[in-house]
Image 1 (tube, rainbow, N blue to C red):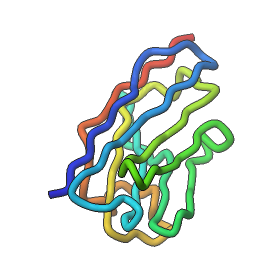
Image 2 (cartoon, rainbow, N blue to C red):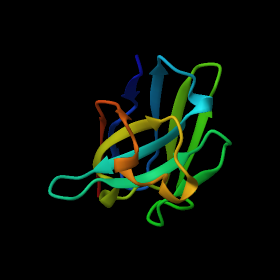
Image 3 (cartoon, one colour):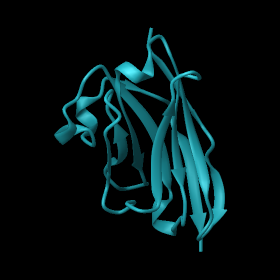
Length: 125
């Protein structure tokens, strides 16, 4: 049974950093496509960053140069390193997994079957 558990959220000031973790169980993360998504109150869910089984990554334009996605296969954990945080990054962040997604759709949430419960990130000005 696939399970995803996010952690690492919190409250930071503008310019600060956070690292989100997504601990996976029930499968091997290196064989799946995985992504980070976020949803702010009153807004649609947005794909932030993703990585496929081959290690190819993709980022939303709004986070390019500030966020990094990585995985630790030994720990079966996905990470999102967030630097230079802005108030507009405030949202609930979710990780998601799917056996295979072509690169063109890695930031499309409807392509993912498995989701975590989310972790809140709040950036104050």
